[in-house]
Image 1 (cartoon, each protein chain N blue to C red):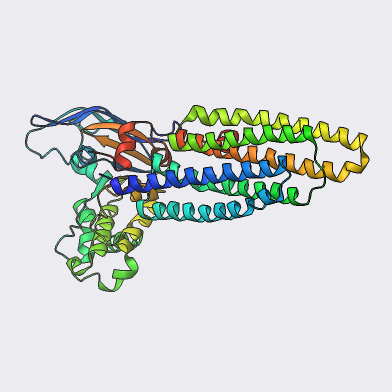
Image 2 (cartoon, rainbow over the protein chains, first blue to last red):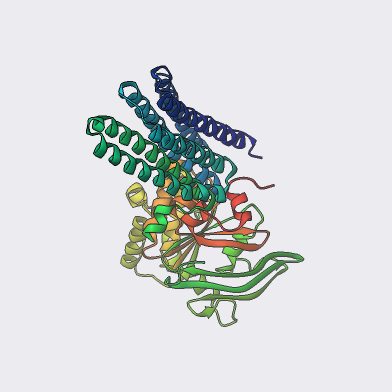
Length: 218
Length: 256
């Protein structure tokens, strides 16, 4: 009865999955470049960030076309408007992975302890991004809620990173510049977690019709 | 439901209507707020037009019709024997899907109702005609041809003449049954603007198949299906997060 519209919505879902996969690739590559201190790997991140920019345009086009031509209401409207909001966060995730890769290119030195913490952070935020996009496609409320609660784990990692960097600065003042670079990287990972949280909040809106911001203002 | 702090102008209680064996309205309990636009939506045959017509007793003349339950208007059951139906229809006016101006001049179309209700004074009639045509947003277009036939106007103009004719008897409530479905987008938007302007002084209840129209102008929307009132609430909520799956299926075009 509305097969063309449903096909377009499926296309939207598959584009969102693709965009989510690109986010995961960008984070994983930036993290690997960091732990292996590899400029070659770091150089592969900016093209993925560009691909994410392009994907954002593509999804925007699909959504605007659907809004114009189908004039969606109810669940359809929520699904499409949620996608429009989510892709902004997904595109920012690409930028932040790129920022991490950029630091890897000029950073002097390395530290085993931070590298391990960053690996854990990267694994956590990748899982958050995967789950948030999965929750969107499956309209899975519980999965979206899990993503949001998992953000605390990422924040805890960031606190550990900060403490450890303070130690470095106190004990090895010469490593101050290095510590600041590491702090930036930690902050970028922490921000990626925040973006995944934003995505999950829009998934909740898509499923329930209520966004966190509306709950707060009520 | 409408907000609790709304003033209710019409309220039906367990309204049932039968056309012979056909149970066309089933236990409709519906509180319609004053000075708001309420849209009735639903697929063909769902009972929305039938319900609209019960509000000024337009179904009375249908052979074999049986009506049970109450329709309270300003605290009075409009189906009680004491009700003067002519007076009721003055208070609750109606505009139909197809413009149906009388085959007479524009002026006489508008003056017809007031004359029926006993207004004879020419100056008074002139005033009513001008006010009604202004309220219906068509005065500027017809003021120089008031004595010409209303049938010479375009469809959109004729429909606004019909609205002016309904307004001339100073109703409380205006029932609109698909009143823009035969009009082009410009005439439609004029009548939509008009409905929004009118609600400060009138209550508008409209049946529409055009969901975008319900979204654009109504404050409340009621969804009818198979003679039942399935869901009723503020329009934005109905179209963004309806609570009943049948509403969602209908408005997103998943029906059937």
